[in-house]
Image: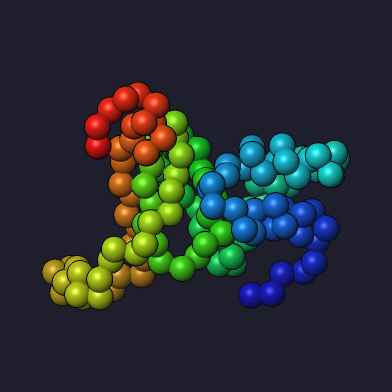
Length: 132
């Protein structure tokens, strides 16, 4: 689906396109607003949802009560730090055999798979003086 050009949407995409920190709508809004002071949070959120619905972004619910957006749409997993909240991209650990097994067990079709790992990131482990 092709989207009609929008200056606001382009500014949002320019901000998020190469990010790996999985920003929230509030983060996108506060940053885009620096160059577009009249943009509203509602406009940012609607455009993020539109970009998600058209397949240009993924929306992540990692259990912290807010939606995070990820411009990397290729299959991959995520590690979520329970201390600082950082979300780190991981290589895709799903295998075709696992997907086929789920499909065989359910008699259905797997359209999407998401894996989240939770713990402490390396920085938080180091800052707390903990061992892995």
